[in-house]
Amino acid sequence: MSASHIYTAYDEELKYLMRRITEMGGLAEQMVADSVRALVNSDAALAQKVISDDVIMDAAEREIGDKAIITIARRQPVAADLREIIGALRIANDLERVGDLGKSNAKRVMAIQATGVPRKLARGLEHLSELALIQLKEVLDVYTTRSAEKAKSIRDRDEEIDAMYTSLFRELLTYMMEDPRNITSCTHLLFFAKNIERIGDHATNIAETIYYMATGDQPEGERPKDDLTSSFGAITE
Image (cartoon, rainbow, N blue to C red; front, top):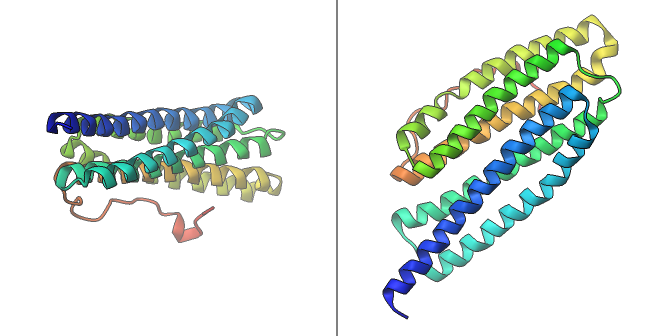
């Protein structure tokens, strides 16, 4: 087998990983957006679709993992090529987690469908999800360009989502203290909001991975954080 044929086949394998990552990213964005839309509109059918789509996400991550392992074993890549494959594995894992969080939120839509969501709280959740989805979309765009500068810029904006989440957290606690009848639905919404904040964290993880893929180094300095909920009892799931 000629060297040129080997290089062409190897290049196709790397392009395949990139294409599947892009497809996973598109589905992850759709699942998150649909889960929020299902909450705002009390749309049980749309929530169920999000839950069903998670199976596709899980299968895609396994497929990328299998392909990456075979490529490493067959080609024994080094330097930038090895970072490309390792990066694909990391990003696939983050996107699969984004899908899981979208599915979790869709399940919460089903749980609070009977009580509904106050319009003010719905707007807050929509705004938070918009910030997270913008960050996710931008980082997936950067994945195609491998711009270390843009990846670092996205990573440094993580505190915007944290600040919005902290504000919404306080507002939900206020609703719960004002009327105990709100406790059950607001608890679901607290988890819903936390899941969206974590989606922003996964987008930031992807930005750090892209920076590593492009430079071989990790971004310098601590990741900026503005999540103050731990000062009055953070919600985790």
